[in-house]
Length: 420
Image 1 (tube, rainbow, N blue to C red):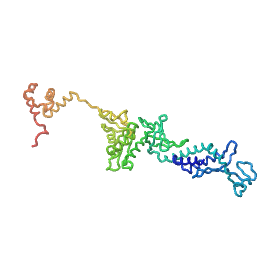
Image 2 (image 1 turned 120 degrees about the horizontal axis):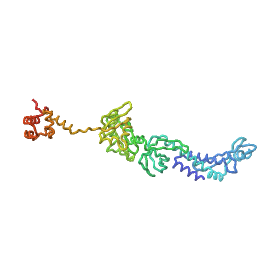
Image 3 (image 1 turned 30 degrees about the vertical axis):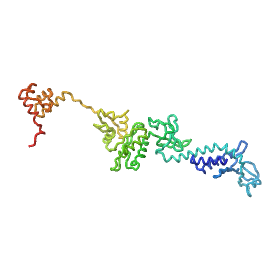
Image 4 (image 1 turned 180 degrees about the horizontal axis):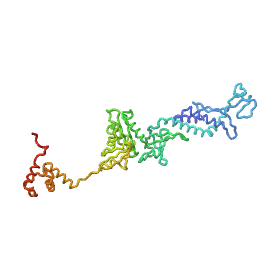
């Protein structure tokens, strides 16, 4: 029996982290309780149990009260008989009578086994709680063990944690044996012991990854001013620096993008946009929407609503796939966004003709004459290169008018006049 107890003590100490004195106390209490209950033909009695820490030897004694007249043999002993177990016993004293080792062995092997297991489970629960209570809201690394109805069971250290399906990022598919990093969001005390709840969809999961990868964020030089996330698709991060010499975006991206690549890899390829923080909401909108360019921005500060327009080519970029970019930008700014399309007014033929005629009048040609010239395709002074007076007379202009036109289009404009 002693060798078995030693084996249990060594296993618990090395594998489970339970100290030898604690485990010895557990076994002693379990055997004591079982021995006090006794067997089917035995009366309950008070028992004392001891285990030697070095040898693992188990000893037990029945505690009996010394009396002159015995009425309960399981709890009392006659004064004369008590002298066999103690020197000069007196009535009322408690003497210890050693129990039969064979009987004690049967009790320890059969009755106490379940009690020992139960106490062991309690020790493990207490150990898990003490180990993880200071790690809530921090990142933990574990190994995927199995999947249960969509939830993942993850082994973290010597404990099992739960990654519920609602806390998983869409599109992620984990198989048993894979390494996984999560945010410990909750440590709940349940009836069956502490339960560790993990998350990979939380915004704080991304925040902790940035703190881990970017030393400037960890030391407070760079601050995550605002964040917005659609788990599994895209995250927008707004950063600012307390040191004018430190570029907050560059610090987060890292040399050749090394830092942000590590974060994206940990997030299984989820896109991460890092933008500079501006106090002015319009400037922040311009920064957050790049490469789309907002125009005609109007603010309703009371309702925190922002209306703006973008070019048709930028509309899909500003809204994003399934509206993700617009939603993230709205959350990042804390403003509701109304996005419109810039209306480009098309210039008709008549308007273009009139504009060309007005261009000829600027050099001194009458509008009626200019209008006729534009109709013949002579829309600017440069178009008259190679045109002669005879050509204009052939188009229906009289000789003086043709000469006047050629003089005007060949004369330098006021801006081209030589300085006197």
